[in-house]
Image (tube, protein in one colour):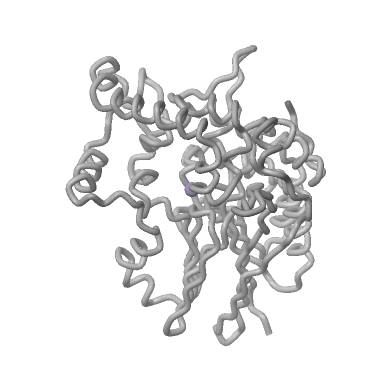
Amino acid sequence: MMEREIIIMGDIELGGGTLTDDFISDKTLAKLIGSLTQKKHPVDLVLNGDTFDFLKCPYVDGTTRSYPRHITKEISLTKLQYIYKAHQKVFQVLKRFVRKRENRLFFTIGNHDHDLFFPAVQGKIKEYLGRKKNIFFRLFYHHKQVYAEHGQQYDFLNKIKPRQPFHTYEGKQILNIPWLSLGLISNFMYLKEEHPFLERIKPIPLMFSHHRLIVKKLSWRSVKYLLLSLLYFPIRHYYDPTYNFPKEMLKELYRRIKQVHWEVEAIVDKFKWRRRRLVRNNKILVLGHVHEKYIEEKNGIAIIHPSTWRDEYFLNEKTKILYPLPKRYVKIEVEEGGSLKWELVELHLREGKFQFEDVIKDEIAFIRKAAEQEKFKLSF
Ligand SMILES: [Mn+2]
C-alpha cells in the first residue's frame, strides 16, 4: 500500500506572459497536476523554487513598463496578478489539487521568487487557490527521508538572506534580493527584451561562441556594472541599501582572484560538503536552480537535479539545429513500511525544432512560434 506520493519539480518560472516570460508549457503542466488530483492516496506536490519568475516580470505603472529595484509588497502583488492572469490554467489545476485535504502543496523559495517572503504575497496565492491549510511556503521540504530545496544557497552569486529578507528604505519594507538579481533587473532586462530567445539556448558557451554580438553587449555591460557597484553607487546612493555592495561578495571575489578560481563550482558539490550530515541522514535529495539533469546514486543515497520547466533548447554543434528540451519531475512513492521508491520522469512535449540561424535573425518571431506550438497565449 502506498502511504503517500511525493512529486518534486523546480524552476517552472511562471512569468507575466510578456516577451520575457519563458514558461509556455501550461497545458502539459496542468495535465500532469490534474492527473495527481485523481490519485487515491495523498500527494505532496513540491514546487522546488523559482516557481514564479518575479525577477523578469515587468511592472507596469500607468503606461511605463519597468523592473523596479525597490520591490515593495504592492509591486510584488501587482506582478503576481500578471502571473496569475497569464497562467490561469496552472492556478486552476492547483486549486483543484489543494481542494483534497490530504494533498499538500509546497512552495520552496528560490532566487527568482524571493517575493514569496511577503506574507501578503503568500496570502494572495492562498486566496487564488481557495485554500489556507494545505499550502506551505518554506525554504526546504522534508518528509521521511526525502529532502528538497532550491539550491541558490550553494551559489555565492545568487545566495539569499533568509533571516533578513527585507530592507527598510524610505520608511517602506522592500525586498533584500542578491546583488546579482539587482544587477539583472536594473541593467540587463533591456537586453533580455532585445534578445528574448537567446537565454533559452543551451549549452550557453556554445550559444555564445556562435553569437559574438551578444557576448560583446554582455561583457561591456557587466564590467561597467561591476565597476559602478564597487566604486560609484555606494557613494552616490549612500542611503539606499540596494546599492550597498555586499562585503561577503567582495571577499569571495578576492579569494577567487587570488586562487585563480573562476568556474562557479557545481552547487551539488558545495551542497554535499556543507550539508554532509543532512545528506548522510536522508535517502533522496532534490535540488533545482541548475537547469540541467543530474543524478548521483551512492550507498543508497540519491541526489537529483530534475532540471527546468522553462522553454529551453539544445543547440546541436554540427547541424545548428535547436531541439526543445524535455521536462522532468521526481516521483517518489512512500510505502506504508516507510520504504521509498523514486523515479525521474521525463516528458517530451513537441518535435518543433528550429534553425539557430533563423532564430537569431528574428527572436521575437520564434518566441511566438514556440508559444503557438504549445498553444500558449502570449499577452504582448
Ligand atoms: Mn534559481
